[in-house]
Image 1 (cartoon, helix red, strand yellow):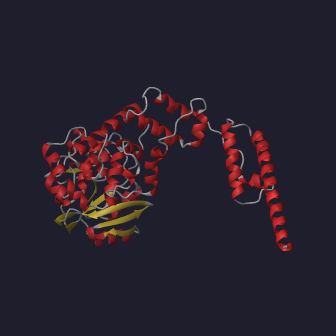
Image 2: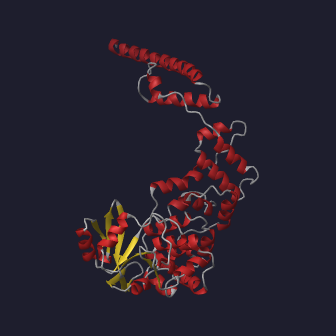
Image 3: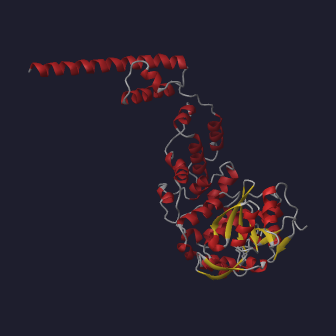
Length: 420
């Protein structure tokens, strides 16, 4: 056994798939192997086999395993065994590439399949017994913190320009040593090739890179090779991100990290309207959150009022970003953030139903009265529910008196009209 298999990796579902594919040579590949070597659990299990897709579907069907031809043109079948999903791909070799897609032919040689993969740390294969196939020194590279292309960087990148971003994403997670000169040169030379990629693919890689435990060095190298410029990410402030991770390590959200890198932008639209990316509504909202509270100031005498009216996560992020960009004194910012996070804010005790129960008819006046009452409650430092109910009665009486006067005036006008 070359690799100690992590607990719970070899599940009953995985065993069923491997047994169904016998006697065809079959091994786990890619991230699951890399993670097993590191002793960590993998989220997904990818499988490589010498069986062609039609044989995979037939063999698994005999064993009652459900299959879906999710990428059958490229040899990939998704299997569902015991509730687990496995992507099973026939061993392949590239015949032609265009920078985005590859024309492939099936093979029964693991070494040929490994030669077409992106990085040495992703080109390893492992049996369910832990036997390892490593044609390109991926295990040694993983131990040394080296992210290295299989073969020449130029060739690998020109096969699929997404590999530029994938390089930085994997470097952010596993890299401990600076890339070699050939890799740096290839990343710089081919950066414009990313224009061929869809915004969705670029967004996926960029977001994952920002989600790494420490993406700063990767981003510095991206800037040095002008990859960030090619993505429309200039101006960029990676040093500010370094400070954010050092002084405010709790801010690990990728949206906050991106905002930190481009906090000097006048408007969040500089980020969200970047056509290199296709952001979801949730991603746009997360990016906009600290920008939206840029002009909110903390009331030192009544911080709970500020916190009640402003999303605390957005406000604390904005304070941290201002601090690392020199727009707010570093001293005191951590204390302000800790104080805001520790506040126990009460819940407003009045709702629309209670107001209507006092005889206020449904309509805009209910919302207006509710907002007026809530504003009074906040400015009065959150008095008790009893006090809020008393105030509600007062405001409701005022509104009812006003409504009654308006109704009487309307009736009088109607009467005058009839008499005319």
